[in-house]
Structures are given as C-alpha cells and as structure tokens.
Amino acid sequence: MALKGNLRDFSTTQLLNLINLARKTGLLVVESKNGTAHVFFKEGRLTYATYGGQDGRLTAMLVRAGKLTDAQASKINEQPEARNDRELGALLIQAGHLSQNDIVASIKSYVLDVVYRLFAWMDGTFRFEPSQLPPNDRIQVKIELENVIMEGSRRIKEIERLRDELPDLDVTLQFTDRPDARLRNINLSVEEWRVVSFINPKNTIRQIAQANNMNEFQIRKIVYGMLQAGLVELMTPRGQTTPSSSSTAQVTAASPPPKSGVSKSLVNRVISRIKQL
Picture (spheres, rainbow, N blue to C red):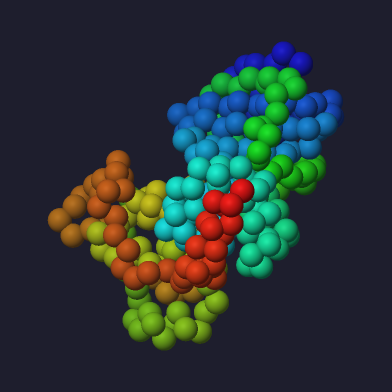
C-alpha cells in the first residue's frame, strides 16, 4: 500500500482504521512541528514505536516505567553487548528483578504513549512503508488497534477539557500548606513523584514536562489532579512576565523522586552477565 499525505486531509484515526481493516504490515512515519513518530504494524496490529530523537531501546522504556533509574540505564548502556534488547530483557528476568510481564507492560506503555500523541496532531505529513519491520533485536508486542482507536478518541476529548482547565503551561507551581503531611497520605505514581520533585518557583510546568519527557496531556493530567487534591497552586515566576520554555538546562529538582527498585548491586550483576555473552 503506497500511502502518503497530510493529516489535514487524513486523520490519525482514519489512518489506523485503514491499517487495521487492511491488516497491513509495515511502518507509518508521521512528521509535524511536534516531532516525528515511527510506528510499526504487523498484520494490522501495533507492535513497536519510537518518537523524536528517542531510540526506543528497552532501557529507555524501563526508565519511563520506573523500573530503572537514569543512572542505572546509562551504566547498562555503556556496555556494547547490552544493545541487544532481547538479550538484555532475558538477563534482567534471569537476575530476578523483572518479570516478563513487567518488560512487556513497560514496552506497551511506551509504544501506546507514542501513538496517543498522534491523535492530537492536526497538521503534518505521513507515509506508510509496506513490509518494513523494526530492528531484529527490539522486543515487539501485539496491540489490537480497535482498543487504541477508542482510547485515542477518548483522550482527544479529555485533552480539550484539560486545556480549558489548565490553558497556560508557562506558569510555575508552589505547594500549599504542609505539603509533607499531605503527600504522606496520598499514593502517588512514579511519574507523579517525578513532577513533585521538580516543583519550585524556578520551574514552569512546561519545563517540568520537558525534564521528565512528558507530553502536554500527561503533565496537564498530573498537575490538574494535584490542583484538585489541594497539593499545589499556580503562581507566576518572580520578576518574569513571560516564563521561558525554550530550554530545560536550568530545571532543577527540589527533592529526589522515589528510587527505583533496582539496586546498584543488581545492575552490576547484570553488567557482569552482559560481559560474559
């Protein structure tokens, strides 16, 4: 299927419907001002995806899922033998920290996040390259497109609502009274803790999102939830009328997020096993 065009004429929903109904195998490349996404399909099912400059390696997916810290992932990535995701996944399972379900769930979450971004893209170009598959070493999943289309459509409506509730991301956040006591009584996800760790008068919401590699939907949803729970309130940076959002170089964490369950000794054991391959 030689297919290419513009998102103004053919939406993400229509593209996915077509690939699903035709049970196509190949690569969909979508480019816009927001970035570039590479999405792979096999017989009409979603199997793998990458976004922007991200290489889509397993370590990046595990960091995003809170299974590895950035430091642990960097240490593992320094080993040339660790570039094979399949072998690395097997080593992590054998080491006893992650299960196969943990790895598959992390990959699915990463892939779906890439695809859900596309539903909000109203302008850009796309092309479908038949029969093109991901690199052989990458771990692929199988996700039914009907569920993706339904969830993507629901998110579009939620994105519109969140934009109405929280239109400006170039403002900062501050904690309300006694944040420590409040936080102890609330169960936060790893991503929510990461946002909490960057809340200070110097960081705008947009900068916090960029520092944590979150899209606008994710950061708006988390911040809106915290606002509703009375944990934080909006403020404007002192001495600034228009906060800068062009760089995350000055973004600093107010407190460290919860540590990943992967210990340093486990990472060292994994690296030792990698060297023996």
